[in-house]
Length: 401
Ligand SMILES: Cc1cc2nc3c(=O)[nH]c(=O)nc-3n(C[C@H](O)[C@H](O)[C@H](O)COP(=O)(O)OP(=O)(O)OC[C@H]3O[C@@H](n4cnc5c(N)ncnc54)[C@H](O)[C@@H]3O)c2cc1C
Image 1: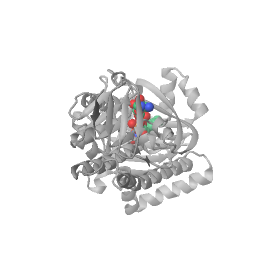
Image 2: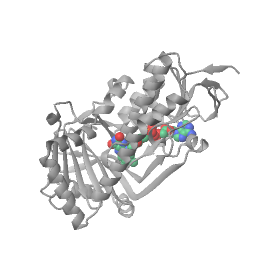
Image 3: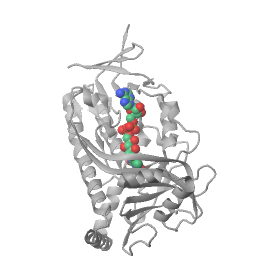
Image 4: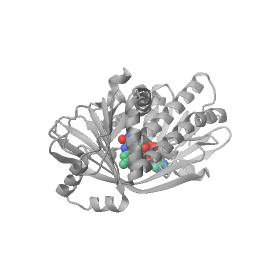
């Protein structure tokens, strides 16, 4: 059987691996993408309640990948962020932080996009050829050597690439096969995700409400399923509480969401499904091995408190994509050890800082200890009075800090 040559093989057509494949192909590279699952069942004809917060700093990458302009549903801009400290069913602390994107004289902080919107755009591009060969559902056997990588796809088709990228999510088999150790930290919390329709407009404002059980976020979405005013809800609770919530019927669950949200959006109703995720932090001790690079959740998993997990993955893809395209343009080896070392140097500090920051935020806010509450309320008040500190936090939220 003949062996085809491609520049890069990407294992995993999830949001990070899929976006990297599109970026590389738009830049002129040839890419083989293998996913063990079929792509089409990931598309949901109806809104299913899941969404991503795309930070302003991640949007140019999705644009360069040709995906932003192909999203079938309009992204919803996040123009204001309100952070408060409180208890469900009680008024929030009078100390709160209000961030307005106009204070930075830049565009919005970011956008909310439905997960199915990105999936539809990804699936169309991955199936369109133009530099991308897609094998899904399929398994791949990977043999890495000094000069390159041999990929044998389930059917027996053989490919030779310069680099293999593992974008296989948290349980990445390639990471394990390469002997790259991970550090894991279970949060003993679960993330609960759903979407709501509400009577009052959200005015493009995101709310992060720190409750003793964990953070509660309401994020503005565009209209869906005939509802004009829609928001995504992401909140965390101790695993036992989350399990009890998952057993509630829809009216009782909606009541629990409303209690945490407050009444500023008027009456609410659930849209689409509810999702539950056990939360843990994960860190790969290395991002690379011979002719192998880890990206996205294969390299790191963080607490969803700041909605940054996918954004970190997109930043990995942005850096690796640029390095590979530059090497190909210069006629250099796209899987060379120097390139991989540069990739790790540029991505690990950012990912580590975000892991530490989200972990600290979770510890600081998921407590009802009166001393800790008093200290963080003072912190909130101090940030409010210091415009440079406010601007620093705003720039970090936008992914441009
Ligand atoms: C509750 C919650 C809310 C979140 N909200 C946000 C948010 O608002 N914003 C944000 O930025 N992030 C958010 N995140 C994080 C975000 O969902 C993840 O960071 C992102 O999905 C990771 O994408 P990925 O492509 O790296 O991995 P995955 O999405 O896990 O995709 C992995 C892909 O690899 C495939 N695969 C697996 N094994 C193999 C194999 N052996 N061979 C081939 N293919 C394989 C799988 O089929 C899959 O398609 C949230 C996470 C949680 C838990």
